[in-house]
Image (cartoon, rainbow, N blue to C red; front, side, top):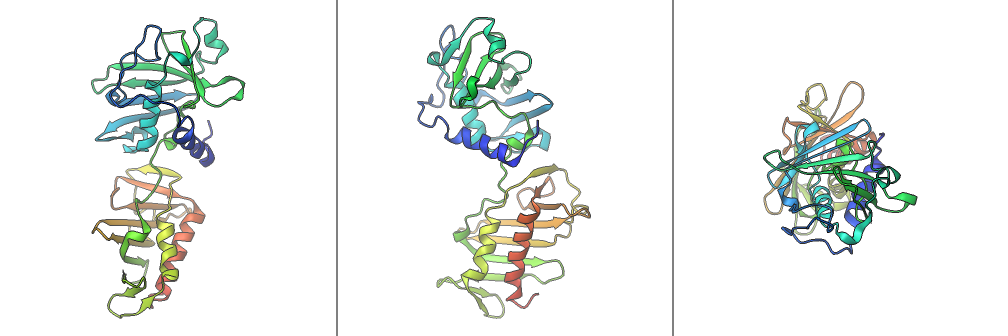
Length: 311
């Protein structure tokens, strides 16, 4: 299955928005079986491992602390909202969603051997649910699904078949950065000295050590671009030097009004692939950025530095 950025965006959007008016089961609730709901006595918070397969794709999500990590990317954080909504909406499927129970309906609904499979396990490795998914018939929104050992088929508009590709599940936002909260900005490019800019009460930015001021129109584009960076792929245990990240072509550090720190570093390898790393990721992961996004970030930083005398 070829996964494009549009596929991923649509998958996340559908999980977040489709069926938002449905009455979801509350946390910790239990859904019955025996002619009732889809699953038997599962609290979605019991799930510690999700393995999704289909076609040539596989993704494994493993609980890590309060969230999940993508095993194929060395535990890189999965999108917490997407995973939790996926589980909660499975648990919420009730008797009103039952559409068929005859054995011949399994193939008719595309829920046979070619269906997408999702295996849910608890922390001991015990299987909680073995599910099969297929798109809803007649090209309508949602999906149909069943338990592997049951011919009872349910239909829901609140889910689409899960995508069996690691990239579809990552938290693709590079920085958790609220641009208006940035009070101190430190940046440098390869070959330039680090410059520190401090936001004043009047909104102007002052260059530490010289007193020179910069208008928000010069600095804010960099902050907005940095807060809107999204990954196209993830590299686990990267060779930072080979990726052009040791040292980086650009380093930006952001200090927020509460003292929290954020940092992003940008580099490119010999083939022109742009990558980033953050203070949070350390040397565990690097992310791949689109060329236009990387150039926009670098260009915005250079425009700031050109007014500080560093370029």
